[in-house]
Image (cartoon, rainbow, N blue to C red; front, side, top):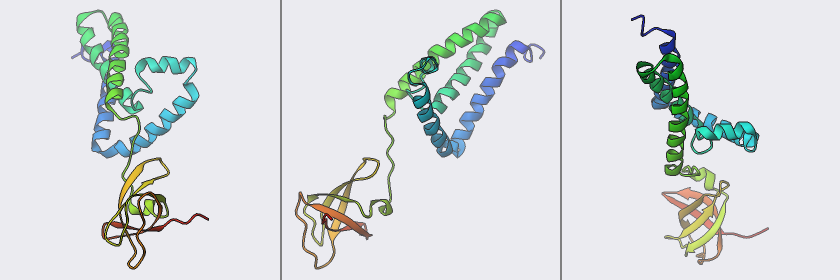
Length: 196
């Protein structure tokens, strides 16, 4: 028991437990708040450190290749786990150095792999209220029964909308611009876009 609570084991238990807590919080729904913090911190890190020495040092861990929270969780878990394993194989001083090296290598490998798998941009489904007032290009002629308009939102995301014109309104031919006015029964109601 004394061996388990020795200083050279405790320094690895702490990061391992913090990493487990991060995973538990993320798994229990803390992901939305985490994503917001991640985006803010990643943006700040990119802005502040991109060309500096700190930025180059952080990039060794893979920061910038995948979300910061994943890098932090991964590095804590790897450091704690590898340190405990190395304590069984070598002297405590060497296990500390070995744990740092293993953490650098494996965290970078995980971050690079996740960075290749994850999309470089995030897209979110937006509701009709975010589409109202936008204009787009008619792709399939819009009539009182059916049509399709492509609209690009403020995040530069393309939305392919099922559309109709208002009853008794003229159809809008493909290639023309249309303004999204309303949303009813699964269709966006559009009218011809008039500039000015």
